[in-house]
Image (cartoon, rainbow, N blue to C red):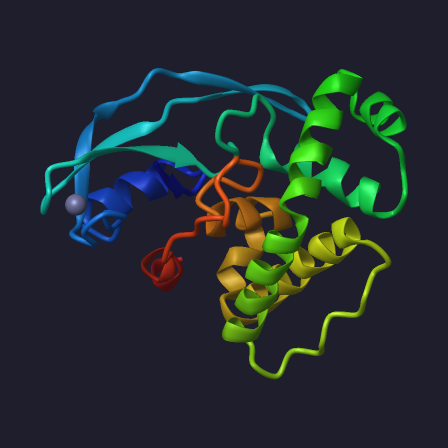
Length: 204
Ligand SMILES: [Zn+2]
């Protein structure tokens, strides 16, 4: 699964120009039909996404190009889940967060637990990313818990990315966080996988 931008026209352009690369062999991927449409829940109601399917020109593997709004196997867009993570980092409990977002308490608790389990690994990945993107970035201050430290590291990495690639500032913090972990911010993989999105960024 490759994570690509929300903008369907942009995805087509990237595909047609061979700017998207295969995670397995790095050859260019080409259009190859569409995957089943999915509905995701945004803060403003349902959004329909129709993921593009692609085929690698090198190894022949097919990939679903997952829109950036979607985290793998989650029904909500990245921005909604990210809001819950930020609120939790400020000390709010999952029931109040769920109430504010209009989501089931159990759903929100699931996101928070998954992130908490991976907090230290995510903190390391995003801290390293922040430094690799902007070597002179100010050190990230301890935020009081592993969970809050990880959220702070995501913020620092995205700030660094935004300074280097201002075009990406049209994306939300959590869309970018979603992109650099290839949609797997809350996935069970450990350590978190991330893709080399330099081709995407170069073309952004
Ligand atoms: Zn390939």
